[in-house]
View 1 (cartoon, rainbow, N blue to C red):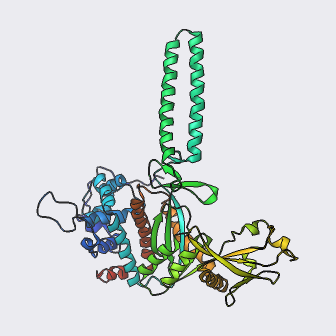
View 2 (tube, helix red, strand yellow):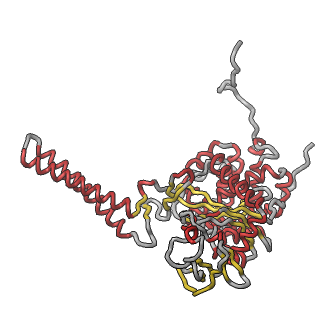
View 3 (tube, rainbow, N blue to C red):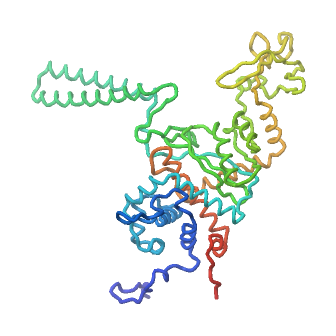
Amino acid sequence: MNHRRGLDRHQTLLLPERLEDYIAADNSVRFLDAFVADLDLRALGFAHAVVQNTGAPPYDPADLLRLYLYGYLHRVRSSRLLEAECQRNVEMLWLLGKLAPDHKTIADFRKNHRKALQGVARQFTVLCRKLELFGGQLTGIDGTKLSAVNSKDANFNEKKLKELIGRADARIAEYLRQLDQADAAEPAGAQSSRAELEQKIAALREKQDWHEELRAQLDAEQKQISTTDADARRMRAGGGGSVVGFNAQAAVDAKHKLIAAADVTNEETDVQQLANVARQAKENLAVDQLEVVADQGYYNNSEVSVCEQQHITAYVSKPDTSANTRQGLFGKRRFTYDATRDVYVCPAGQELTHRFNTEEKGRQLRYYRARDCRSCALKKQCTRNQGNRTITREEDEAVMDAMAARVQAHPEKMKLRKALCEHPFGTLKRWFGYTYFLVKGLEKVRCEWSLMTLAYNLKRLLKLVSFEQLMAAVGVKVPQRA
C-alpha cells in the first residue's frame, strides 16, 4: 500500500483566473470588506480619506483598516507579520486587491490614527445595536492587567533604586580593595588586571549615577519609573504575581457578552474607574437608564454618586476594610444608622450622635460618638480606646446604603458579574493570546485595546448572526443560494 501523494510540483494546473473565485460567497472576509466600505472614514478622522491632486498617491485608509481588522481578528498584530500576510494569504490578497504595504506604512497607520481607530470600534457598537445584539439593561464592569513593552528590570521604585545603589557601592569598594592588593603585590600582568578593574569601576559608577538620577525623579505622586514605556506601571496581578503594564477595563453587556465600552488606565486599582467606564457604556448603548455590576475593587462613594447623577444604577458589594474587624472587634457594619434621627445605634443599643464635620483626603466626613462606653458590658468587644467609640460617615453615604440594600436584594446579579466579565477576558487572553501590548504610551495602548476588544466583538458577531443578516446590515444584498 502506498502513501497518499500530492501533485507533482512541475505539473501544469488550470487555477482560477480571478481572485474572486478563491473566496467563498459566505466567507466572513466579505463582511469585513463591506463593513469598512460602509464607514465614513473622513468623518472618523482618517488621513487621506479624500485624495489630494498633488504628490504621490497614498494608500487608501480603507485598505489599511481592512488589513488591521483582519489581522487582529486572526491573531496577527505585528506590522511585519501583517506585511508577510499581504503576500501569501489568499484572503488578504482578495481583501486588499494584492496591495502589499511595507511594515512601516502599516505601523504608522496605527500610530497616526489612534482616535479614528477607536471611532471605528464605536461604529461597530452602533452596528451591533442595529442588529439588536445588546440588551442595554445590565453590564458587568471589570479590569485585567496586560503587560507593556517594558520588562520588570526596566521598572524602578525607591526601594529598588536604593538597593541597586548600595550594591554598586559594595562592589566598587571590593574592586578598590583588589586594586590596592594589586599595587602592593605588583605581579606579572598587574597592569592589565588594573586596567580591567578600573573599567569595571567606571561602568559601575556610570550606572550608579543613572540610578541616582532616576531616584531624584521620584516624588510623592510618581512612586515608580519605567524606562522603556514611561506610562507603564508595576501592578499586582492574579496568582500573587505582578506585571509591568496597564489596567485594561471593559463593560460587558449581559445579553450576548459583547463588550459595550473599553478603556485603559495605568492606575493599579479599579477604585476610580467605575463612573468613567459605565458612562461610556451608557453612551455606546444609547440608553437612558443602565445597571452596572462590579466587584469590591470598584467600591467608591464618589464614583457611585457620579453614576447616580448619570442615571446609572450600580451594584458593588462593600469590602470590609475596618481595622476593628481585623482585630476581632465590632466593625462599622455592626452599627445601624437611623436616618430620621441622624444617629448610629451600637450593638448594645446605645446611640452615637453627630459631633462635628471635617475633611480628610478630599472626603467630607461627619463624626458620631457615643456618650458613655466605659460602663458598657460590650466595650471590650467594641473598642480598645480608653474613650468612647467613634464612627465616621461620608457626605454621600446614603447612596452607598441604598446600593447595599440593592446588592442584598439581588444576589443573582452579583453572581452574574463574574460570568459576564471573565468570558471576554478569557477569550482575549487564551484564544487570541492578547496578554500584552505591542505599542508604547497610554494613548497608543488605548487604541490597541480598542482593536483587541473590536476583534473579540467581531468574533462573537460572526457566531451570533447569519452571513446574510450581516451583509444586509451594511447595505449589501446577498444573492439567494440555488
